[in-house]
Image (cartoon, rainbow, N blue to C red; front, side):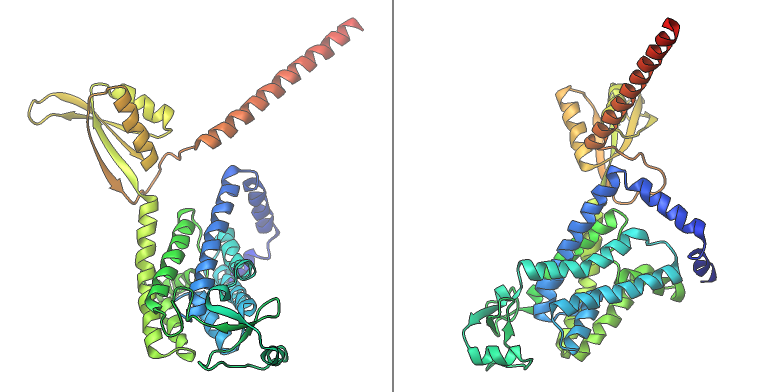
Length: 394
């Protein structure tokens, strides 16, 4: 704690941090991951705005806690986004003070854009477009404009649109067919699927959505629970706050949703990070080795193996490939009629060093940069020759 406090007041810390950021700012990887984080959080904001807010589901997340506070205080979509930003900012400060710089700038960025992205969805396509209908009633319009809450026959409040029109609720939520016909489990499934996909994309590029992830890390570090149990504890605590605005049934549904969310995130994360572990035995192992290294940009290992039936000596090639690279290797072997014995299995976890593959676009950028450097070197040589020739003539 003391060391964490001190580093913020050391000039070299901020200087090194700025230098690192400036260097990363000029890389393709930085902008690609920035786009992925933004698009991922856009889906996360849509999950909160279209499924959490209308149905008042409280799943174990900072968005759910913000919804409880916002509803208890009579807020709207604008105030909800402010609560999301405020709580995330508070947790980010705690993360830097209690945990350190582990989360980094990615978590700061994703956590702080969630609130504004909720406002973006509210302005582009309000959820009231699906759950409310426009009615003409000047008396109700005047009362709402004066700050009064007017309820319809079903006990639901009338709302004013941004254009000043009176809105009456006709559906329980975005996915329901009408009042009293909504299925909260359907809303829960839609919310969990959309949010879990967002979280999986963030985790894939070593980012997070902030909020509950930060709370789980704090619980994990100071109470020494496993990270999975920490997420469950943090989510359960937030779900229990829903007693302020929901009945017992809705709270239990939120707890189940928190548990399902963890399962779906694990599924998406494993699916996105799966690699193919390929084992090939063939007389033309040298051709395949060169193709894997030179064309696919991956490493491989060679093993001497002995056939158990014929006692024939062979060379086995093993390599870890992505699904696309595995398909390219199969096509290469099929097009070149390479006779082989090959097995392939899924590998979801890789520890240690693994050759980082360069995409074709990155290779294209590197090639352009190399050509520019060659042109500059030739131009420099020509200029030096002209200057030398001028000196000789003088």
